Image (cartoon, rainbow, N blue to C red; front, side):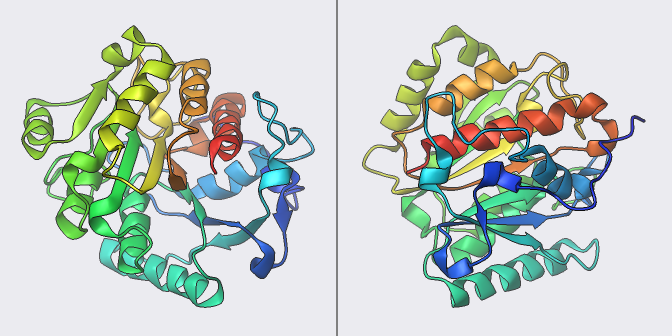
Length: 309
């Protein structure tokens, strides 16, 4: 096991120097969800939110994206810290996330969020909670799910709240239409999950299919799939969409993935879509050699902030 980066006494200038102390003035809220009780192989993503914050330091990065967008001109970010997760019980933790987000809604009208995982079940916690609060109102909501795994098992090793069941729980327990879910980069599916996706109408662009197209063409497919049907999109970025050579610090590393360049290039093509909220999940800092995965997460966050409207 490789030690993660030395923790500073304090995190200096996180999120590329865009953070402010006044929630009322903020136009985006960062919330960490330190949960990894549903991880099926290597745990440790519970420690990721603080590490991701460090990796976005303005002492390292200037505020400009590759497309010359100054994110300090677009975003005033309030870092709300981490949800206080009190147990390994998924339902209790979901309630704690909902309670925290309800308080945000009480303090600010229609806040937008970046969620820091945690393993991928935090997407279920956050999307469910935002649906309960009316932020993602069912039939007009969409999800873009970047992942090596489809996460469509009904249960995994007896656990219906495994991180391998995220999208099944979202489909079961929110009003989202499965046809408004698009999965990108999948390369570790099963017959059961493929059949469920086909029967439910979930659009899946497998990794090999993805690489046959230019990023713009893949974005066109998404836009065509969502046009006239989706007004609000949740973008979920599981870092294991990346090849372990580019992201060694993962709970479930899956060789044969994308390069960081390919992922960033694709994200840059999503600028025409109504993405309201996004998350970054599955960083496991204890396995992250030279902080490669943490810095990849920071790069992905920066470029995503650059394309949101």
